Picture 1 (cartoon, rainbow over the protein chains, first blue to last red):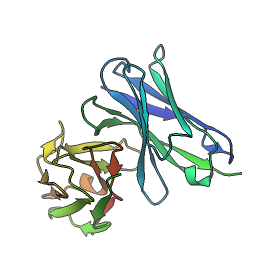
Picture 2 (spheres, chains in turn cyan, red):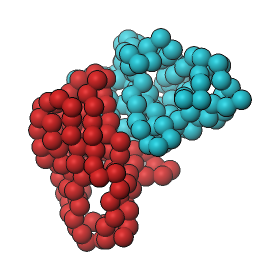
Picture 3 (cartoon, rainbow over the protein chains, first blue to last red):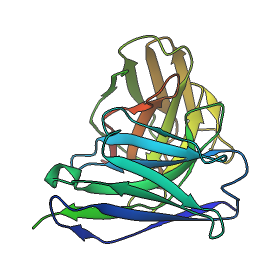
Length: 119
Length: 107
């Protein structure tokens, strides 16, 4: 069964970078599919942030494009999110999720990791 | 971006009842709408995609309808495990966008 698990620090200071890892088991991230990051803000709003696909290409939400980077380590079957210059508005629960190449819905999700931006 | 307006934001019902959740897109998204269930401590669960196609494992008491801009998720004969937070999401174009969520609570 496909499983995704997020990990990373729960607290980040303003102006620093937020770095998260998504570990995938049960499926190779180099096979078909896109590997996404999505976040949920306090108040429950969900925002798609971007993906890295099986070939290593990326696509980011234009609202975040200048601040985020998604990379991967195929040897560990992991992909990563980095958000630069964080503010308190980046406080959210961050999820990784899988989507098909030809569609834009998410069939497997991690449980999420809560990140607070605070000094 | 396509704006998704989901209603109601809160819904209270009893086991055995039927409920409906609505989602309206700011422009036509054809049939490309997904529904998810979110519960604390659990991974989000894809219930329905392409408006009415049940994801493998989704119970038949869940159904989706609609096309264009207006969509509905109906849950018939509510079970205790159905209570939680539900989201719609358009998957017609990038960036994918979500509704604000509907909290389904036990009456």
